[in-house]
Amino acid sequence: MILVYILYDSINHTIFASQVWQLLLNLIKQDQTLKVILVSFETKKNQFDYMHPNIKIIIIQRYRYLGVISLIWNSFKLKKILKPLLLNKPFKIIARGPFAGLIALKLNLPACNDITIQARGLAAQEYCYSHQTKNWFIRFLIKLRVRQLFSLEKKVYRKGNNIECVSTALGKYLTQIYGTKQDYITIAKQDLPAKFTATQLTTWRTRLRQKLNISESNIVYCYSGSNHLWQCPHQTINFFKTKLAQDLNIFLLILTPQPTFFEKIITQAQIPTNHYLVLAVPYQAIYQYLATADYGLLFREPHIINWVSRPTKALEYQAAGLKIIHNHTIAFLSE
Image 1 (cartoon, rainbow, N blue to C red):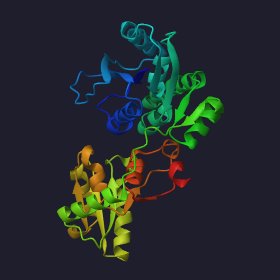
Image 2 (image 1 turned 30 degrees about the vertical axis):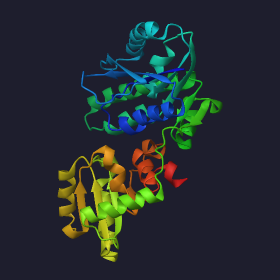
Image 3 (image 1 turned 90 degrees about the vertical axis):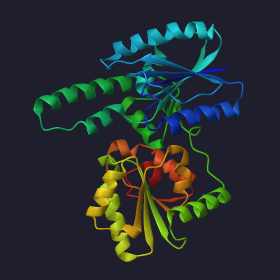
Image 4 (image 1 turned 60 degrees about the vertical axis):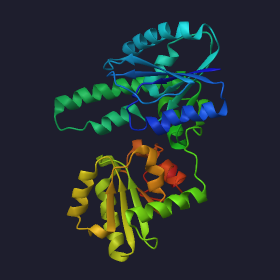
């Protein structure tokens, strides 16, 4: 069997390694005869370190989204590339998100057995949330863009007959707002990271605590993430500060690609240096560092995009055996 995986949000996206590449490796592990054609629409031509004998990577130039017509053009270009590669052999498609979903639906290749569209968030809501301004003209343009994205999502999630959601809350939203048929919705399971054995986690915990000079008696809270406001970094620091006032035997481990930012706000919060550590850790080693902790901190702002999400960090915390402390803004965790 041949699998065509269509990606629109770039191989360079931070979640590619865990949510896309690892999924493909898992599928190949289940069926070692599986051949994968990974198609990524990229705005820039960059070098990629990802290689596998069963995976062929095709890069197609991506331009600014100007409406459905631009996606149809992308679909036409992809169809010309795929035809000689597939030679009418049976294949299936996985498309990540509504942009890739529409490209897949417009291919119209008769040998395609199935099209799975992965719903991983809400494009219209996310755009509206991340583009807030007081300028009336800019607000007008944003409103037009949101309406355009809403129309795209509605078209894709209504037409697709196999919509894979990351949470039941997202599935309910698609059913209620976009009219997706309930029978067409499934909950994603194959891209969940494998949980590590207790022996492996204990080995990492012991070794890393010694390396980082963290006492085995310390209760360690971990924040793994970026400095985006929607990830509530300040609320996380304030939570730990409150806990520290109650118990001096606790420690905060921050794993982030923006260590300077966190060093600044944690200094402003006047948390003693012997109670925290800020590190920039490569993804390949993230689970080893997570294993040193007891609790994972995951605060989010109350908003629909957070409520329907299934944060990658939550999955990583769970795989490393951490208990998650959150503020009930994510249905996946509240359930």
